[in-house]
Image (cartoon, rainbow, N blue to C red; front, top):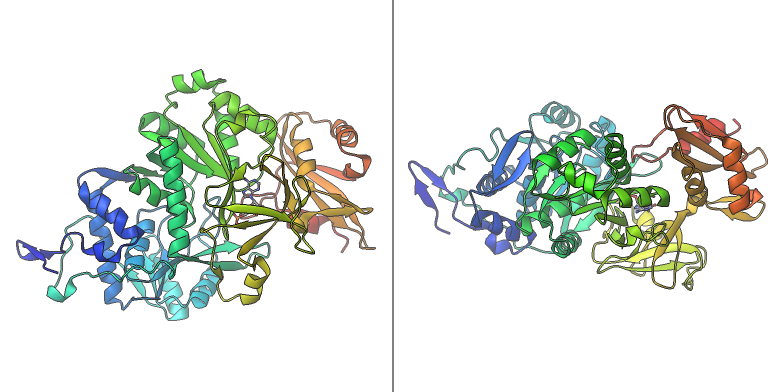
Length: 538
Ligand code: AMP
């Protein structure tokens, strides 16, 4: 490859990444085609396509100098949703290596930096060869280096100046893209809190990106506001936006006021992705402002939003109906897992149909689902309740260094979700909870989610959690905890009577606690483990 000289400096040959032929090369080519176009906004800074291309080149060269090559894992510790999250991934994938992000294990929300012990575990289990850190991650990275001996790689002015090459040997040359090779190890915190690494091949990552490209095209969406961590599958959504020629507005975490301000100021923002609870925060915020319908939403300058993709936890049908009346057909609910990628999708129009609003929709393009008997594995007919299994190109290769756990959840090419549900005649999936959460009372299986929906249907109830508590004899009892809107008067006996009538007296929780705040786990879901613990006989 011939390189150009400019003044006394050499700059890399154009399109040096092309030979790799993977997704990163595709994106960089598009960015390089319009180098002066602003494509990314973060913390008041604007990055052009050229800035991003330069940044990837610099990071590529720095990591190569560090010795990173094919099959190596680079741990990334940079500010929440900083542009360096995708930049470093592109560079590492172009080197033939994989990334593992050290900041959070939770796809739904952004939490503070993970405990140092978890990060050490992640570094050791992935055999990371270096920790790539920015200024915000530098102190922690130094601590990690001291405790593990893994060196830190830092750059000081990413993307802001012309990339300088020290000599002709510095010409960046990518590794040929191997879609079957490891591209990302995503960590997720299980119920025990110990992070588990999910191994995603380049093929799985690209399949997720292509699915998002299809959704973007279908709804005419290009520019996006993202506030959930780019370290998880949302990173592939960001890639899709670049591939669609759109721009990305990054926020570090979801803040409803900042979200509304950005969408109303930047009319180009046509889609967003958020956790289920964020959608309802957005709805509540608009209602508090006296906005009641799509006309009001338009008057507030928010009509540019064509799609709000969300998911990650159950959404009460009554709340979906409220959101639909307020926002119109813009919501797109996804059901998926970190292990399997997207499984189903409830479309914009489905949200307006009360019969469908309690479902999680139909299989995502490219995904297949079935419901099986959890014990025998036999496939069940429409309407029968069992364990949900999914299969698609987005699926993980397995857990990192956990072959037994991998064998439990990946069988015959299917991912066993641990979710319980049924598929109706039209192919819509309804979820009823987790296999592990089913409460058996006197031989009857009580699905917490069904009860939670009943409780949440009562005005004034904000969050509800239903869980089983075992007594000394080992028998399970149904208990519930609720958090209500401030000042709301909620009649617990009325809720009990409603459950007895609509479900059965067996479903009525023996205890119903009204708490000031429901404890939430790191995934932003009610912490049933803690609730159960505080009530179990010691
Ligand atoms: P995670 O791997 O942390 O994304 O969690 C995946 C789990 O979240 C799934 O197995 C479901 O139990 C739950 N989940 C994800 N999306 C939805 C949804 N749209 N509705 C209900 N539950 C969901």
